[in-house]
Image 1 (tube, rainbow, N blue to C red):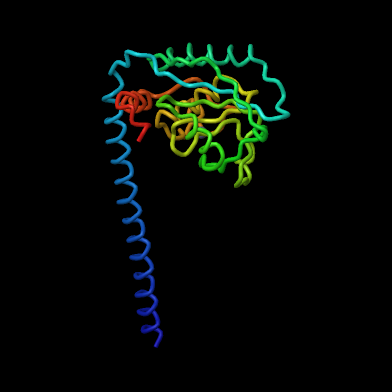
Image 2: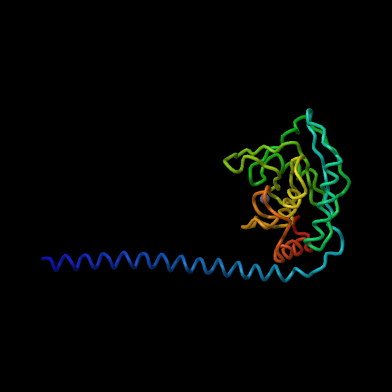
Length: 226
Ligand SMILES: [Zn+2]
């Protein structure tokens, strides 16, 4: 009898082991595929790093004011836009140009509503104002409709069509650069030393070569319009 028990135990152990092994194998295969895809994408985007963008990329710029919106310090915004232009050129090698700021007024524009994916009022306004150039909206406040934890405070948000973004008045050029990155097709970056890091308070003024390549490829085809 004791011998039989031992056999049963052995078989059970073997099964458990092979299940873990299969899971590990699947995990390994999926991980390898993801890594391979990232490497292919990295190389693909890197190929575009050296292409030249001759003309400055134009961006239509608006200040949205509601009935009781506090007066925006125009000098502050002009300073931040100038700084954005300068730093952008330094890290990407191509120029952006902000078209003359237009001030638009509507009764309930103190707070622009959007969910964290840029779906909501912001999308409607971008859609209305879009004329072929990227659209930047400076607003007093952005209210997330799907507020949860870290996502409760938006300094800026890109519209889901990636044609435009809304940015709160009181932010600096780094937030403008981050949202422009989204408009030009960039996703969030995992590490802090990058303008596309998810948290605007800590990111630094840098982009990788494949990130710059990806934006250039998109701008060259002008396909953020699609
Ligand atoms: Zn972002």
